[in-house]
Amino acid sequence: MTDSEKIVKLLERENLTAKQCADIIGITRSSMSHIINGRNNPSLDVMRKILENFPNINPEWLILGKGEMYRQKSNPREPGLFDNIIETNSLSDGNNEKQPQKATDENISTVNSDRETISVGYQNIKSIIVFFSDNTYEEFKHSN
Image 1 (tube, rainbow, N blue to C red):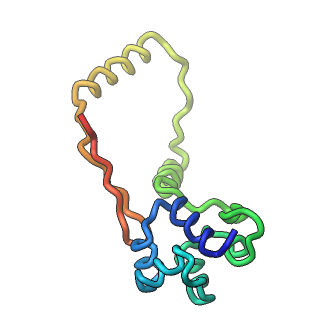
Image 2: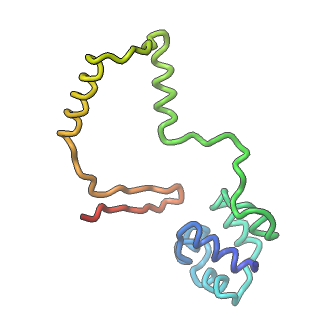
């Protein structure tokens, strides 16, 4: 696989256009176009910029064509969106941990009444906007 083909594959996998990728890595759009069309080979500087801006790309794959496209996750998992909330809740509980309760008819009816209350306040989602670390975003709109 040529370097140009690897960059095209990167664009496909990351769901980017050539213009978006050029802007992200800091090269001119015409340079990216020439690389993708095979007119020019990417310079070492371009490859370095790709690796700096896409840290999950395996450098050995990008430069030598060996191994998988993405790095293997050998490092501990990066914190997720809700990890901080879970840690905060577990720290604040301290000795006030709730003991598990046996299910009784009374408990079950309480849970069921809560569900009814929640379903009454149902709202439709209009859109969800996801912001990425490269200062781009994607908006998902609900279609009726």
